[in-house]
Each structure stands twice: as C-alpha cells, then as structure tokens.
Image 1: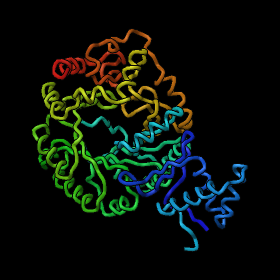
Image 2: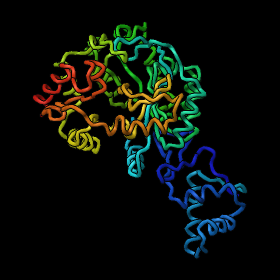
Image 3: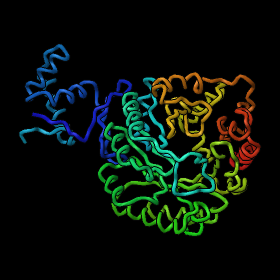
Image 4: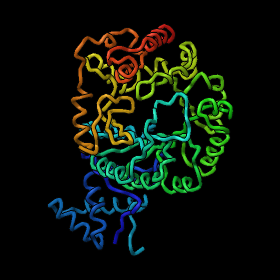
Length: 92
Length: 346
C-alpha cells in the first residue's frame, strides 16, 4: 500500500531519528526529525499492505491495543508524510 | 559552512554523546592552481580512491556524521569525484564542496542540480585576471571563475564566497566585497596564512602587514563585542582554557579531518596526532583522539592560558608547533597581533 520515498534515508544518530534527503540539501527542507514511533512507522511502511496491517504491526511492536485517538494520530501522521512527499500510496 | 538549521540539529545530537558529527575529507593533493599562500606542500600527487572513500562513508554513516566538506587540492580535479560525492549523499551525509570553481563543467552542473550540495564554498583570489595570475599562477583566472559563478547562478545552485587577503590582492578587497554582494553573498574574509604543512614558512611572505590585518578586521567586524560574547563555542573555549586543556577549541571533540592518504586528524591544522585508517577504524581513531587530543592537558605551564590578550588570539598549538617547533611557543607575530587587536577592539 505504501512506498517510502527512495529520495530519503532514515538515520538513527545518538538516539535521534532523521529522514535525510539524498538529493536535496542546504536550502529548503531536507532533514526531518522523527520520534521513535515515526521511525518505526517509516520502517514498517514498505512491509505492510494496508493501514489496518500497519496498525496491527505497530500494536505488536508496542505490545498494546491502540485506542481511537491513537489510531487517528497514526492516520494523521501517515497523511502528513504523504503531503510532504515522504510516502506514496501504491494504489494512487 | 554550517547554517543555523543544521547547527541546531547537530548541537542537539551531540548532547547525547561524543560522535564525529562534522568533518573534512581531503580527496586529493593535486590542484590546477598553484597559490602562493597554500599550505598544501603537494609533495605527492595522489587521490583518495573510490573504494577507500566509500569505506569511509560507510563508517561515518554508522558513526552518525551529518556533514562533511570535501577539500583538496582541487576536488573537481578528482577523476572519481562524482561517484564519491553521490555515494556520500546516498548515505544521507550532507556535503559541502571547497573549490576554486575553475573546473566546473556541464557534467558537474547536472550533478549539482540532481544532488544539491550543502554548500559550494568558492575561494576568490581577486577581481582581475592580473591579480588571479599573481596569486594562483593561472592566466585569465578571474574570467574563468566569474563565468562559472554565473553558471551556478543561472542554474540556481547554492554557493558561498570566501577570500584570503594577501599582499597580492588586498587592494581589490573592496571590489571583491562588491562582487560577492552582486550575488547577494557576504564575502567571508580571512587573513591568516599558514606555513606549508611540511613546516616551510615561505607562504607567510605573502601575509599582509599587521596594520592591514587590523584594517581588514575593522571592515569585517570580526572582533565586535557582540560576536565575542555570544555563542556557546566561545564559552566552551573559555571553559577549556580555564580547565588547563592544551586545545581550547573543539578540535577532535565532534570534528575530524581525513587526509587523501587516509590519516585521521582532529582538524585540518592539527597534524601532530594522526591515525592511519588503513590500519584502524574511524571509531577507533576517534576514540584514541579523545585522550591524545581532546582531553590532553599541558604538562608544562602554558603562558597563553593566562595571557590577557587570549580573547583576540588565533591560539592554535598545532600551528605553533609547525612554526616554532613547540606547541606552547607561539610565533612572535601571533602575540603581536593579539595585543594590537586588544588595544584596538577592546
């Protein structure tokens, strides 16, 4: 369902997580700082078929059932990443 | 040059521990310019191989390096520049390029359009062909450089301009500033001339007089009270001085420099401690640097640490060693300059 942008690479540096552009640099947005959940979502995006599977995999990682608010936040996070061009939906 | 955004990110990262966050890589020794003031003795004409450079990139990626600058020699002369540059970028490492820009061609333009460098830091040596020739030995050098800068502008590729003021080009300083302003750039101005990295002092013959240095620094506002007082870096320097460390700067703390021969140093100037990366990893070298350089305290009394002019001094034991043979003995002109600055700017 999702494809992470090939133009970005995820780096973990001293317990910080960054999505760093491989081709853009200097002016404009080329580094995104993520939290640990954001980094986990990024890693899982290429492995899942749909949003439901993503949520299930995240629930396994964090060993908890997400409530409605948390699920909404994850949807929102995905849609922000899409808007920033970091993620693409395969069926689009 | 690191802009505020990247600087803020890196400052946060290093709060979690010492890593080689920012460094320089000397890709080759050779240069098409033969500048009168250049510290590079060019005793050998060698290039860092792609295999070695990519191995460095792999290690730096794992260690957390965010930014490197490529220098030389002239980096655009390196036969595998494109391959090395792309390799670093694909690892998520931002790259600045230190260049004289004379060798820019369409292939490099395409490369920099596709993979934007963090900065192209261009050395400007004058504003006329005549001055360029007297500094670099290159005929019609300014024409060439100006044409290539215009190409960068045309293709909207980011760059910055810097100059070293010498006896040969000081009378063109004002014009150089205007030239940079034409492109909305602030010319970075340096007056410090280092001896050749083999210790030969012949480059110093081209250094401008002490009075001229002061005049240039008045123009640049280098020692304005605001720039002296502000900044974590300066506070850190003061703290290290008070604590008796040999190096007051952040040499080797978060920064590094790797020569084309594969020797890891704390910075471009410090060549006393070197770690051969053909024998050990960057992580090992960087760890050893902690005790050898970063935490090194002076065994003898360091008169510089209590000098009243220290705030205005380009204190650098590595350079002192190169010039006087002793890390704690500054050359007389360094002391004289610091004292004069104190009298003028304090």
